[in-house]
Each structure stands twice: as C-alpha cells, then as structure tokens.
Amino acid sequence: MKNFPKLLIVLLAVTALASCADKKPATLAEAFKGKFTIGATLNKGVYSGTDTAAANLVIRQFSSITAENCMKQENIQPEKGKFYWDEAEAFVSFGEKYDKEIIGHNLVWHSQMARWFAFEDGAKFEFIPGQRPVFPPYCSKEEFLERMHDHITTLVSHFKGRVDVWEVCNEILEDDGTFRKSPYYNILGEEFVYLAFQWAHEADPDARLYLNDYNMHIPAKVDTYVRLVKELQSRGLRVDAVGMQEHLDINNPTVEEFETSLNKIAATGVKVYITEWDMSALPNPYLMSAEITNRFEYTPETDPYKEGLSAEQSKLWNNRVQSFVECYLKHADVIDRWTQWGTTDATSWKNGFPIHGRTDYPLLFDRACQPKPVVNWIIANAQKF
Ligand code: G3I
Image (tube, rainbow, N blue to C red; front, top):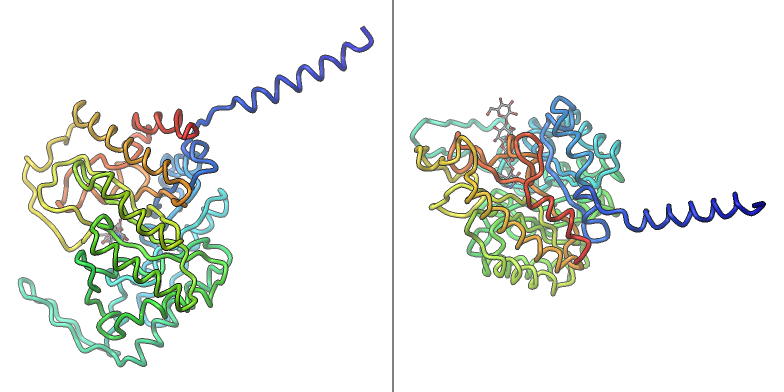
C-alpha cells in the first residue's frame, strides 16, 4: 500500500509516453516532419492579418512561407534608391512570430522589374495601344552593374539572418534551354547569374540560395540548369538548390517527367525545392506554363466548374496529386521543401491565368479553407514512407 503512489506515477508516466509515441500527425506540417518543409505563399491579406481564416490556416498547417509579391523589385524599389520595406517587413515578422522557414522571392527576375532599373535615367516610355512597345535605350553596363549590386546587397542585408532562403535568379531560361533575352542577359550575358549569387552570398553568408524556373520537366531546360549549377560550383559560389516551380495542369507533365528532372538535379549534389506548386483542375488545351504574358480569351466552355468541381474531376485531381506526393516522399532525401503557390483556391493566381475570370481549384485547401481529400490522405500516410 505504501508503494501505491509510486506505482501509480510510474504507470501514468508509461501511459503518457506510449500515447506520445502513438501521436498521429494532425496537420501537414506534422505529417512532413523529418522529411521536408511544407510551404504556402502569402499575399498581403494573410501576413497583414485581414484574411484571418487564411492566416490561421497557414499558422496551423504550414512550416514555411514565401512572399508572393511584396519582395519583387517593382514593389520594393519602385524608384531608384527608394526602398519600401513595410510590406516585406510585415511578411517576415509574420514568419518570425509563428516560427516559419522564410523564403525571399526574388532577387533577379525579368518580370515585375522596376521600370527604371535597366534604362537610362529619365527614360521615356510610350505605350500605344495595339502597337509593340518601343523601349528606351538601356543604361550603360557599369551603371547596370551598380544598380544590380545595390538592389541585391540592400535587400539581402536588410533581412540578414531573418530570411532563410533567397531565390536568386527566377525564370532566366526559355523552354528550349537558351537564356531568356532579358535586360540582365542582354546587358551582361550569362555573367549576371554568377554575380547575383556572389553578391547575395556576400550580403548574408548563412542564407541558402537557389535558381528557380517553371517547366522544369523539359529536358533541354533542366540540362541548362544542371550546367549552371556545375558552373556555380566550379567557381566556388554558394548554390544550395534548384527550384522546380511545378505549375501543373490536370494532364501534364507526368510524374515520370518530373522524376527524371529531379534525378538530374540531384546528381549535381544540390537539393530540389518545389517552389510554386499548384495543379489546375480546368481544361487547358493551350500550353502548360507560367509564362505570364500568355493569355487566352474567356468562353463558358473554358470555365466548366463555376458552380463547383464535379465529383469525377475532383477524384482525378486528388488521385493525380497523390501520385506526385508519393514521388516527393520517395525522394525526401533530395527534396528540401514543397511550397504551394498561394494559400487557398479563393486567392490563387490560377483563377486569372491563362484566362481571366475562371473558377479554378488548384491548391490543397478549398475556398472555405477546408482540406481536400488528398490532404487527409497525406496526414494519415506521409510518415509511413
Ligand atoms: O497590388 C495591386 C493593386 O494595388 C491593384 O489594384 C491591382 C489591379 O490589378 O493589382 C495589384 O497588383 C497585382 C498583384 O499580383 C497583387 O495582386 C498585379 O497587378 C499582378 O500583376 C500581380 O500578379 C502576380 C504575378 O506573379 C506578377 O507579379 C501574382 O499575384 C503572383 O502570383 C505571380 O507569381 C508568379 C511568381 O512570382 C513567379 N512565377 C510565376 C508566378 C505566377 O505568375
């Protein structure tokens, strides 16, 4: 009888330990623990707290966050030498408050460049509707180098030790594996890649750095990225990963195509980040791309699920996502992060691309912030892989 309380305590402790060991994941973040981080991309509504439902979803389900727009050049340095930090600060503070891995998007991108960035000071832009824009002359190479150095150094130093990962170069190649003829390339040639990585690393030596692009299943494209990674490595520059955006549609690409590209990247010794994942549920007879200049006309036939996804299409979508996730889990030693581009279907960019005004269902959580069936499958099964 004297030993009873002691016995009881031991019994209670054993029961508590056993129930801890049995604890099943309840969220995506828990499901992927020990495998890779799971990310969402945040718009202003989420990190500023006005979209509380989406913010709560991110806080609970995700372990990593990416800036959807607030760190892009035209937003952060719209005028020469004038940096607007408020939104990016709000984004980073959100990540710090809720202990998320923080991803900076991006340092070099031909799109959403600040208008002044590549051109002579005071250059005039004339956009006449229906005509091809005629751009003013570029600034000198020396001036462009200075602007590029200043932008990267100021942005990365400002968030030194706070942003974990920087996407250094975004969408710098065409699908055929040649360089996109952006101002960066036109003025500096391929050297802009190496300079960008060098300057980002100098500004924050602890930040992880990566290249990022869409349509990475195309062999010619991924092969050039492999060459660029090897070139960065041979120059002794830090490169941690290649980002495969993975804007998928309901038919393309195949899991095998994804896996082939992943294996090519892994063979260089760097990691793979799945950086902008979504899977459109809508018909897409056009092309599979995130090239945002591609637009098509709206017709009711292009928007068949305005009132809700059919059971058949929903099944197709969930099954297809599951087969990709099985592949991600199989390669968890190579994949460091899987980020979906957005938080819920309600605010996904896919509702407006490549046709304005459609109703798409591309993300893991629906318009009411509820998990799709595949999310429940992941939560129940990811740790078994
Ligand atoms: O913030 C303004 C708002 O003030 C204005 O009233 C409104 C009117 O159009 O525009 C708002 O800005 C829009 C912004 O999204 C925020 O909603 C821009 O016009 C619009 O161009 C911008 O689109 C973003 C696009 O990149 C271009 O930067 C999308 O949200 C964003 O999801 C998309 O993300 C890109 C990645 O950065 C790179 N990879 C492809 C991916 C999808 O295109």
